Picture 1 (spheres, rainbow, N blue to C red):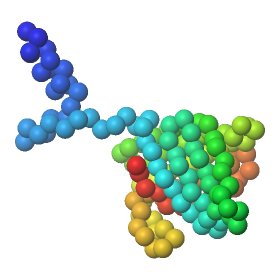
Picture 2 (spheres, rainbow, N blue to C red; picture 1 turned 120 degrees about the horizontal axis):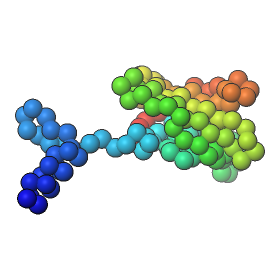
Picture 3 (tube, one colour; picture 1 turned 90 degrees about the vertical axis):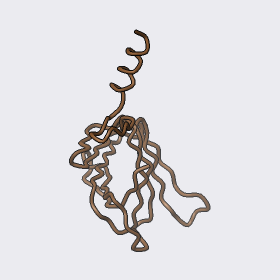
Picture 4 (cartoon, rainbow, N blue to C red; picture 1 turned 45 degrees about the horizontal axis):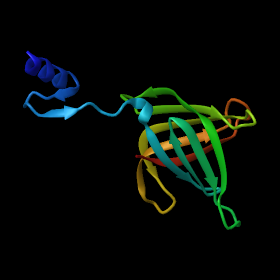
Length: 134
């Protein structure tokens, strides 16, 4: 009885293909994690549930860093669209949209995702970039 129950539980927690191959379920969508980059000015953005870290490369020895609290507002895995929404400690809104689409980076390296981030709700500023999913 225990063996049948455990087998049923394992099969319920996995994808079973017609050829009998069992694969674990994909990670929950809340675990989506992207690293994005862009230019004009040079920037990088780490984006995951709970936080976003934006860095600008300047003439200073260390990049200028801004942290945001927030999370995934909308995720459509089928369409390849991920919307992250949050704010800085001062309350300034920060929104990011990542879409599955070809993108060429700063050295013409190919990426599978495009992004746009900004304070679109409050100020209309938007910066485009390219992303890789972690």
